[in-house]
Image (tube, rainbow, N blue to C red; front, side):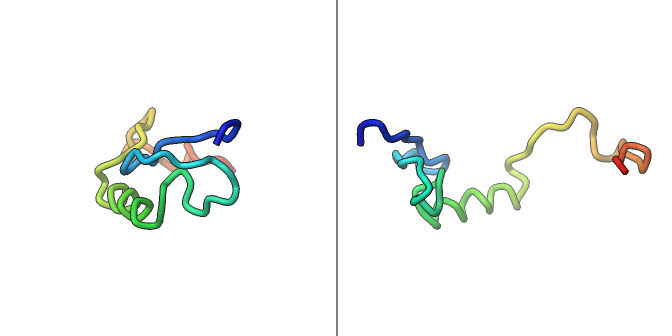
Length: 63
């Protein structure tokens, strides 16, 4: 697979080709995609915010 970008599946670390024909990229398949989704849904993954959500008010929202 020379010349084709490859990445590791975030869940199982299997090597996956990075191209538009891979329907679950960056995951190797539906199972790993669903495992990752479950981690986010259970709030075991999070993206840090500059300001905690509790501190936001309506003035912080863009029009």
